[in-house]
Length: 465
Ligand code: DUC
Ligand code: ZN
Ligand code: ZN
Ligand code: ZN
Image (cartoon, rainbow, N blue to C red):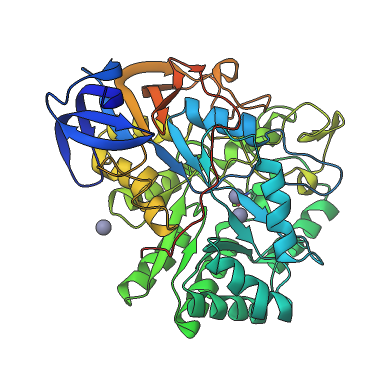
């Protein structure tokens, strides 16, 4: 038969269009759209469901080596399995350079970590933490040309941060080579000064993590990054924007015609700083950076999503278990807030949380949902049109959504290797009930059906800005 798979009666929604069609799939690609396409090895009737492009999670951390003997709970298998069960068919984790390490060695290390283990397709961003003359003049330009066309830089964390001069230098390489720089915008000295003051006063519980990183710290760094982008004349993307003050800076830049892209994440829509203050040590489960703010800021993030201030909605999945040796309680011991690893798991819940609070609640359109979670990340990171839409020639990465299904989120039903979800007990409306990765059914009804090793590495093209 001409098709391996036929999805019939599909109500397809892309970033720009909505149409009813059958979808013919061969060799992992969408090869026909229309009615009466003919025979197929397998037919799936999508009546009553929404047919959306598979999600592209452009910000997640898998199997990154950590300081202090910590390890991430998710490797490329458990992380991508979890992604698939949440309707995500492409992940872009990080290949992080350690200080003193060559950038190429870092990229090769992460390829070894991923090889034969991923269940859905993946690409890499780099993290540049040591921009030596050799990295700036040779390694970075060469790697960008080889398909690592985006990289993250940090304005905080001692083992990762760049100073202002270094940031200008890496931005200049990005401008020359056409790469997209992702910026973690928090002021390092402000955080360490506030942290020392809190600790000196004996304030070390998880909730002080949020006190040590107020919005002013994020706002100042966001403004500084925007200024550097202007001086170098290169677009940048501000990652994990948490609230109204950083949003104001981004809107200010947009008003001046600057090309500043921005990303936000579910934690800034669903968590608040109060969640870090839960009884006992449980608040550690919600420690991430920047920290979640308050309800007014959640509303500001929703408004900014509705008004297209953001281009990308990512999980920032950072898989640290709560209660085991690689966790937020290190070896069972409750840590002072400044030692709690920053980040929360979210690969599997990213799409349902945005769908429920955004689409089902009428705050954003279905087209915006697809744009934020699939099309725009695919374009910005050079994977479009292979990923990010439903069209002839694209990979058959497709999620069928039951938009009315009510699901109570519980960690028992998730597929990551982390021992908690910060969203335990919340009910969402809408869930991807079937996910196809290059035409292979990788999840159905909360069950993982794929296989490790079926996900392929993809080099990235130039960002489409
Ligand atoms: N930044 C991230 O992007 N992820 C986890 C922690 C952090 O600070
Ligand atoms: Zn970050
Ligand atoms: Zn507006
Ligand atoms: Zn991150």
